[in-house]
Length: 205
Image 1: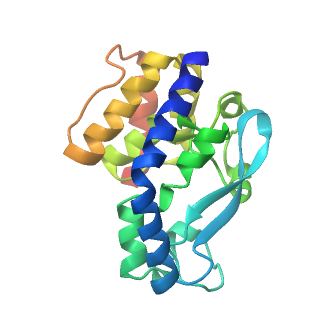
Image 2 (image 1 turned 90 degrees about the vertical axis):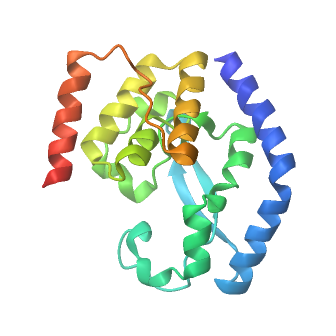
């Protein structure tokens, strides 16, 4: 646990230092082409059930929320779409990691209105993460069911370690940057095979 925290602090500080220009450009793009303020703030559930204000760079034009924010594509212009697909809107996560509200690896922090639809208790035993098993699955397949996300979160909580975190980070960059497939859990179990089959059946409906 201590190695994970020291890794989070060290790497987030280095990343913040080198991404300051990108952060400032992203803020300017958001203010000029999307609106003010350039931040989108939402309540998220964190470690041990503690809520925190999660900050992202705004990617959506002002307007009433009629559904899940992610799917309201009519409120996303080209600049917002660029910020989103480039993940520049997630740069504030580095500050959440630095102060200890998040970690580089863990379950994705859920918005409070989404908590009822998820089994959240076990995922609250670790800090929410910038990436994780569920995010790797999403990068690989482009879709992710609620059931599969929950089971991947459970697997992560049970297997969490510094080395396992590094493997997940490596897998994330392989998928996101190079599009390479990599199995971060080669010792596949029958339980893992079963929930993967169930998840993929869900996607095909």
